[in-house]
Image (cartoon, rainbow, N blue to C red; front, side, top):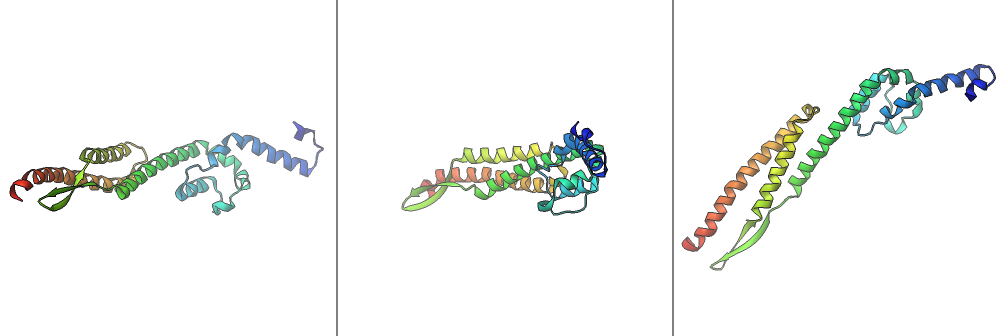
Length: 187
C-alpha cells in the first residue's frame, strides 16, 4: 500500500517490482531453507531454479529473489525435494546409529575359575542378542522407506554383518554353556 503512494519514477517502479516479487515468493521461501540438505540436494535445487553455483556460506536471499518466479513455479518439486532430504536424513541417522552401536558395543565378561584356571566368559547373552535383533529390525524398517535405494548397499552390508554376528553369538552361546558344563568333568 505504501509503495503505491510513492511518487512515480524509475526507483519507485523498481521498488514496487521487487516488493511484488517478494510478496509472491514469500510463502515459498521456506522451501529454499535447505533444512537437512546435503550437497546433492543443493545442486538439485540450484539446477531446478537456475541459480548459479555458489558456495553455501556465500548464499544470500538475493540469489533467490532473482529467481523468485521459478521458486513459485517449482514449489511442488521443491516440496518433494525437501521430503526426500528429510527422508534421507532419517535413513542416515539410522545407519549412523547402527554404525555407532557396532563400534561401541563390547562383550560383558565374567571370570570362570576351575582348578586354578581362569577363563573369561560372556555374560548378559539376552541383552546382547536383543540389541542385535533391535539393530536388525531397524535396518529392516529402512527398506520400507521411499528413499531407500541410495542406501541399499550400506544397509545390506550392515544386515549381512548383523546376521553373521547373530549366528555366531547363537553358536558361541551353545558352545560356552556346554564348555561350562563339561569343564569340571574333563578338565
